[in-house]
Length: 434
Image 1 (tube, helix red, strand yellow):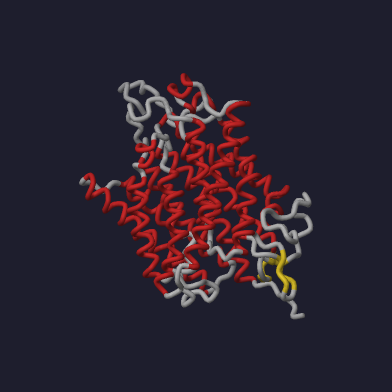
Image 2: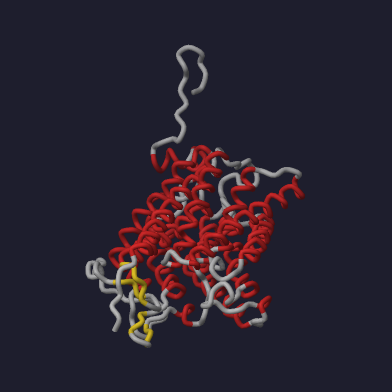
């Protein structure tokens, strides 16, 4: 058997990508923090920060093994040995084949996906969630929902010779999801919808103005997300190669297309193109191209992004039509964008750009790939929604999930953290607010 040697270039790229993906969660904190009112910004950012702490610890104890541990004939979840990753220091990554990068580097990279997925959910329940209850939810949801779903989608099995064992259910069925359209975005979007239902509407929803308190923070957060997303998508190649280059280019042009698509809808509908729309459109494009980034040509990525910007912008109205309070439009951006991006592979996918991919409808491949994509979308959406409803209701009926009405009106930052984001003091000379 040929000896596998460490590829330092690939390892360096995945390490850099890991850092880029971690940056996305603080970027999300800025993005969400700017979108809420001033009395809620610290809580919104803290919901992302506590997620980093909780998921990182759980990942080492059992999360990585549950998602990527190999257990024969176990398509629904991986292995659990509570090894603390101690026995993997000198191992290479084996996920459907052996990659010349240390398995701990792969584990660190996948950890960042596990962190940002529950953090995305927080936007649906802004302004009204007990911080302790949120922490409990993150621990339970990651264990029962994200880790198993990551196994379904991302676990390509342990390859020894010509034999592969321990493949995840959807991966084994041929689902194409390069970087997380189902496991991350549909998963988080469906969970956000479920929690918005469990917690109910904010005090004054649709009666009071609940505008973003800091659009510069929103733009900063969107910029950090866009920057970090290159690690999210291109890093998923697990190598510094042509596939990473394709994913990188497609990420850029799809995001640009979605930004333009969202602004087009705003201009036609309202007569103004807004900074909030630009930021939201960019994120919608990033979401949509995530599953497809290594399976479509750049021209198709532009089309996918443009349609994503239009669809997600229009989808914001769903919450008003159906009467659920998704505070920061997690459903419109992540669920709708994730569904479109995952299904678009069945239309635009082509083996010409990636020999591992199948041809979609527009490349003569028929509907077979689209059916596989729809199966993955439906299964992840249904499981995440139902499981989150159950988890949410249990937390609500035990320790309580929502803060008291008076605390919500006063401001969740004060009630949950005893802090305010902006300290207003009187000047001794002019009496102005600083």
